[in-house]
Image (tube, rainbow, N blue to C red; front, top):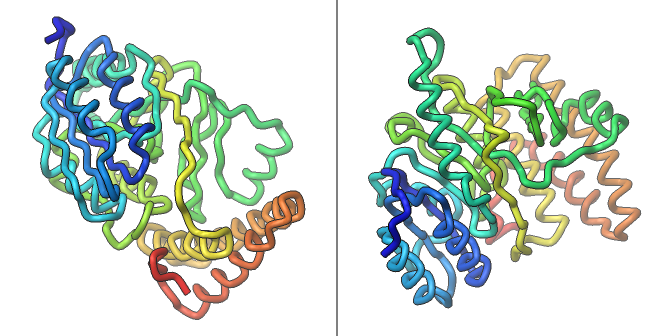
Length: 322
């Protein structure tokens, strides 16, 4: 049992078939300067290969562990399960392939405390806080201008942090101070428990749930303030995942994009044109990527997906995509 300070927070990790990465992530969490009260792992893996080691780590740290295996497959489903199986506040949702700076949890909690202490009841209450990448993206000016021109979002320092009319988000890869944002990325999010009384993850988004994080956090941002703290750092290691081939992946991405645009954006001419304009910019980029990687699926998938959505196809289940 450690004498490290413990906070009344909960961490939720949804995972599938990445047991070694999961173990490393839990080890990172157990090394925090302030520990959470509880950790819930929702595991849809074929086998929970490193469960004994994880149970030992949590026991030694004095963190209550709820290891739910086997769990139903699907990122949005698994996250909702984890939320329902925990009681801590705030709730942290992290990927199974991240490495937290040792004081990441502590700094996020401090931001909650400072903001709530200073809040005077004007404006939206604080709903969530996220960390900033350890290795922030710093694209060149031409890349940023291109992405702004087509409204396709991306990551760069001191960006707007807003969701554009085509439902593409401009992420803040780094900033000089705490920033208000309109969305979070799913590899590190935290929310006050009360948020989940009003919003949950959309379980219609199957598989690994492309943009499920932006969907959820954008809905939350309509009623709560969301913050990104540059003092809290987390490294997303981006472990390889078993995903669809490039053709079907592009089809599914476009299906999700149209679904979320219809769900969350006004369906007026400006917003619809913004979506198709953004897809044009992405299509040009994918032509270049396809030529560079010799992977035509990056282009054929976009064409097929756009035609399907223009005909009203709707969401595509990646497990049965044809």
